[in-house]
Image (tube, rainbow, N blue to C red):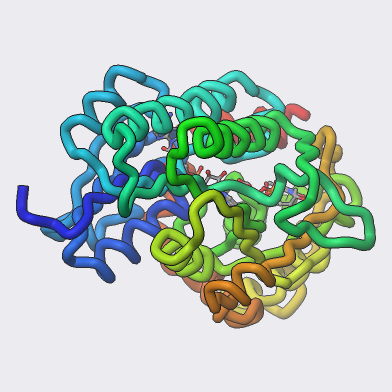
Length: 354
Ligand code: NAD
Ligand code: DAU
C-alpha cells in the first residue's frame, strides 16, 4: 500500500452524513487513505459517492460492524490510525417498529470496533483516535426552556436514542478503563442532499412534488434544531484533528423550528421552484397519529466547540433549505432509485396502515 500519512476508517460512509464526511476527507486529504466500511443497508447507497469513487486514496469495503471476526480481520489488514464511526441504524420510527437491529448495530457494532482498535493499537495510542459520532437525542427532551450542554444528563426515550446513549457510554468506558483515545460529538438534526426520504425534510419535498399527503405527527408542535450537513462534516473534520481526547463536543445549528412552520416553509420553497402558486401545497398537510414517546424539543449549545476549536455554522437556513429543495428536485433519478423498491413497503406500514 502506498505510503499514506494516515489510514482512516469511516464507518457508514454510504449513508447520508457519512457520504458527506467521506467526500470531504477524500478531497481535502489526498495524503490520507480513506476506507469506507458500510453494510449497505436500505440507508446505504453507493450512488451518494459517485463523484469520488475512483479517487486513488479512497476504498470501499462492504461489511457489517456486527460481524466481530470480519471487523478484527479488517483492522489487522489496514492497521487504521483513526476511526470515524458513523454507521448506525438512525431512524427513530424504525426503532419503534423494529428495535432489535438498533441494539445489534448501534451497541454491539460499536463494541466490536472499540475492541478491534484496542487490539491493533495495544498500548501505543500516539496519534491514534477513535471518534464516535452521536446525537443530541441521548439528552432526551427539553420543555419550552433550556438547552443541551455537554453536561446535560442522559435521558433517552426511543430505542434509537437509548442504543446511541449506550454506545456513547461504552466509548467513554473504553477510554476510562483502557485509555483508548476516544472523542464523542453529539449533533442536532442534519439536512441537505443525499438524505434517505424516511426523514422529515426529503420526505416532505418528495411528497410535495408528487402531490401526496404530507404527514405531520401530532399537532406539528415539536421543535428540532437544524444544521446543514456540510457544517456537521466540517465540525467532524475539526474535532477529529484538533479535539481533545476523552472530551465531548455538542454540535448544533442554533436554529430551532417547529415542525409545522418548517413544513409550511418547505411548501413555499418547493411550490416556487415547481412554478406552482405559492402555498398551493399547504393543502397537502395532513395531521397523523403522533410518534410514540415523541420528544418535544431539542436545542444544542455548541459554544464549547465554537470557543475551543473556532467552529461555527456557515450556512444560513434560508439558503441551505433552498439549496436542499433544489438538490432533491434536480436529482430525480437518485430519488426514484431509492423510492421504487422496499421503500413503498416501509411507507405503507409507517403511514398508510397506521
Ligand atoms: P443513515 O441511516 O443515513 O446512514 C447510516 C449508514 O450506516 C448507512 O450507509 C448504512 O448502510 C450503514 N450501516 C447501518 N448498519 C450497519 C452495519 N451493521 N454495519 C455497517 N454499516 C452499517 O444515517 P445518518 O443520518 O447519516 O447518520 C449517521 C450517524 O450520525 C449515525 O450514527 C447517527 O446516529 C448520527 N447522527 C445523525 C443525525 C441526523 O440528523 N441524521 C444527527 C446527529 C447524529
Ligand atoms: O436530533 C438528531 C436526530 O435527528 C438524529 O440522531 C436521527 O438520526 C435523525 O433521524 C433525526 O431524528 P428525528 O426523529 O428528529 O428526525 P425525523 O426527520 O425523523 O423527524 C423530525 C421531526 O419531524 C420529528 O419531530 C418527527 C417529525 N416527523 C417526522 C416524519 C418522518 C413528522 O411530523 N412527520 C414525518 O413523516
